[in-house]
Image (cartoon, rainbow, N blue to C red):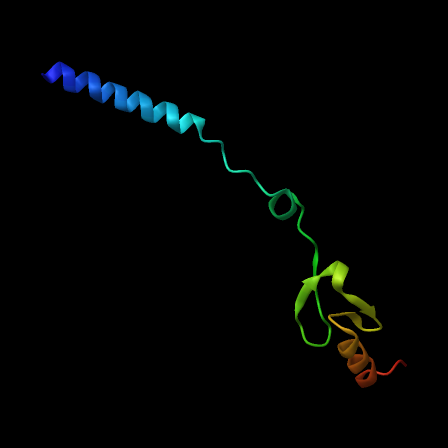
Length: 79
């Protein structure tokens, strides 16, 4: 009887090992994980961090939006 249980246990272990090999590894999303990170910049008016490609250049640095750029340039006139 003990050999029958031992053989059944060996078959269960082999079955688990084979089924674990069949599961494909999860695919990595190329757009989120494979892409390189964007350089981040800080808005000169409010200090919020944003990707460099979304920032608006201005006289005092880069800004998160047109309103902050205009507000900064109004408060700091060109000399």
